[in-house]
Structure formats: structure tokens, C-alpha cells
Length: 349
Image 1 (spheres, one colour):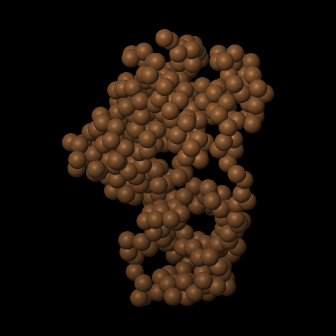
Image 2 (tube, rainbow, N blue to C red; image 1 turned 90 degrees about the vertical axis):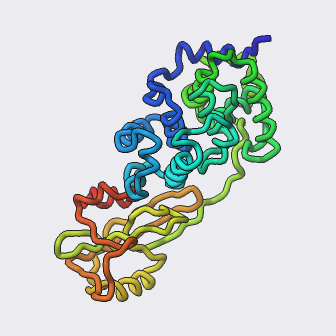
Image 3 (cartoon, rainbow, N blue to C red; image 1 turned 120 degrees about the vertical axis):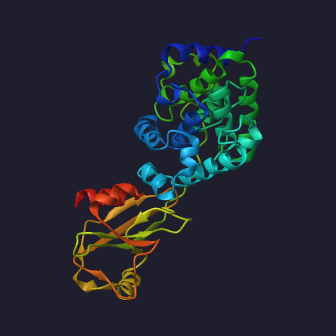
């Protein structure tokens, strides 16, 4: 028996869906995988230029696997959520080691790769190979919660389990030749019509069967995450320039905020920054010029960063350039992965 949800969604997609996204032509496993990772927590319009530029540098999976970390992070810089890039790179290397340089067409093998969760694995299999797997990204959670009237925060295990069961049931009714289209249709529908704020219910092809619309709960579903206030943190960063006009950059640790990216030397307090400066740099810390503060919001806190600028300084004789601390000419900044607010700071100089 046909499923009205899938049938109507595919009909809507044929008329109004997105059919000219760059990862759809050609729709290879590598391109699909790259797009799915970039699209996690990031909108399509933002992703497209990054996707195209990334492919120029790493056109195939083996070429991505063979690249060094700095080259990969440089092409990802500005897209945010940098763990995605680290996992992408690690997964590419695992594919070379374990799967002959190709993404495996197997759910368990895909799911075992870094950065590929259940929904992403399903999205890759359905779009790259037209295999029958459900997805449950943020857009699909919202659509299913409204259509079926599912209350409760979707991140709770019991609610998520219920939504996965519904998603599995719907995908079972999709024609075998249209599984890639169905996956894209769900994402497009949630992103453009059944949106989080001000959904276009009057245009919705599912409106007569939507529980949330019938019961006046569209704005209430899906149930939002229990609210919490983001903590505020402060830090100090040093923009140091030597006599040759080069800038001193410090590579972040491989875990934590801005992991493995190159950024300015940074400390949690002015006194800690001064201590670092006195150990590493020849110059007078008190001569530093205060630049405009930077406010950057992470998923779990808001950072207030105060940059201080000093020119014509040098490292102390006992300190040398190394793998995690180096002088970089302005022309070399584009080759390194820099956090978006730090790149903006350089661009404004």
C-alpha cells in the first residue's frame, strides 16, 4: 500500500526540490560523503563554495588521505566545527588502509569510520548507491515530529528511538529507484518549507495529514531542548609581528576548541599571557596596543577575546620555530587553517 507521506513528499520534490547541487552532478560516494559532513550544522548556501574549493585541492579520496593536516584544515577554515574536518581526514586514511581507497558500501563499515553516525551513513548509502536506509538529521526530526505529533525533545533516547522507527517505516514504502531522491526530498522539505521558524504550512503538501497542524502545535513541535544560559569566558591573545613583517602563530592542541588550527598565542588571563610572553619573546609586554575585542560563540560557551598587538619583536634565543610555534609571512596565512575570527582579524589589519 502506498505511503502518502513518501508519495506526496516525492511529488513535491519533483516540482520544488533542489536538483542542481554540486554534489548531485556527479553523485559519487566521495562527493556525497564530503557534502554530508560539510552540511552537518551548516546551511547549503554556506557549504557550496567550501565544497567546490575543497574538491579543487582534494578531488579524490586517496588524495585527501595523502594530504597533510595543515592543508586539509586550511581548506576547511571558516566552516567551523573543526572536528568534522579531522574526522573526514582520518576516515579517508582508514578507507585507504581498509577499503582499497573507496568508501565501503556497507552500513556497519561506514558507521565505523570517524565522523559518520547512523543518519550520515544512511544518507551516503541512499544517495550514492540508492540503497534503502532512513535518515534522521535535524530537518527530518522536525518534519516527523510535526507530521506524527511526537512530543518530547528529539535528543532524548526514547523520543529518538520512536522517530527512527517512524523513519524506517516510511523509507520502506519508497520506490526502489527513488531512494536518493527521497533522502534529498526530506532534507529539502525541512530546510525550505517545514522550517523551524515560520513554516509555510499553507503550501505544505502534507498539511491535511499533519498532526501538529490539525492540533495547533506547529510552533511547539519539535519540543525544544531544555534551555540553558551559555557561560561567558574571557581570554587574551597576542598579535606579534617581527621586523620582517611576519606573524607569530601557535598551533592548538589536537583536541579541544580550534583543535590543530593555527591561531595567536592565547591565555585565559592577562597575567598568564604576560608570563608566556616573558618566557618566549624579547620585548615589552606593556607596550602592546589593545585591538577591538572579538566575541565568538561556541556551542557550549561564549568567548570574549582581547587581542594585543606588538610589532618588531623577536623570539628569545632559547626559543626556536618548531612544529607548533612559527613565524608566518602574510602571504603564507592562506595556506594554514586559521579560526574564522582570527582570519577576520588579519584581514582587517
